[in-house]
Image (cartoon, rainbow, N blue to C red; front, side, top):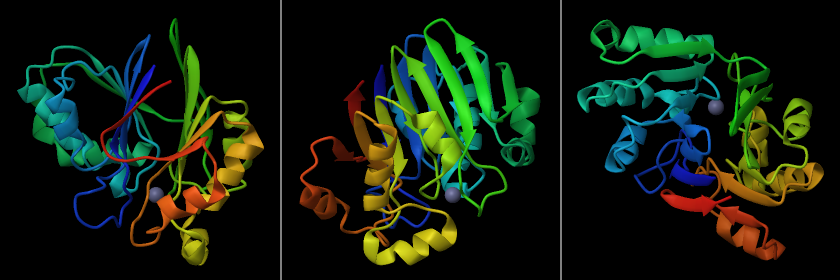
Length: 250
Ligand SMILES: [Zn+2]
């Protein structure tokens, strides 16, 4: 399985160094996109994959996690997509896509199936299994973490506070934990107020679930400008900081 970090940023990330949240997994059971923030269609299109992706899972309805999706659906159509696409998302995301692109949904040349996200198993194929759990992100009406298994296992927490029991249960023994780290410790108060996690809290979560590797993402450089230094200070070799266009073989 390969992980391509398309966007490692957060809602408030300034400039273009860190794009909004988006990830691509190449699994034995298909191509899986998790979140599709603004710009995600450019990097999928660069790789010729807008016509090829099989599933899109959206963690929650905050703009930095899905606003690129209507554009990606449209551009896939333009690029000649014929293959069915399954989008699994909170209900409000489905409604927003329908409102943003009524002309697209009427004229689309491929089958688009939008399924509501819910806790529990969502996909069970040979070579690909996806399960969801509720994340602790009180500022969104629905928020999910997703566990993907395809040989190895990987969890995307999406946005969440630490000590989130459903996310911990989902993540137990996972090979790779892709955890949000919106803030550094100096900004822990901001993170706690908005339902996010700091760098050191994310490391503690990885330890609590026994993850083999921790990938810190959803970095808001306004609130977490010290993430590299803070990770370095821990001396941990099993913690890495996501960057846009980073690839990992899992
Ligand atoms: Zn959020």
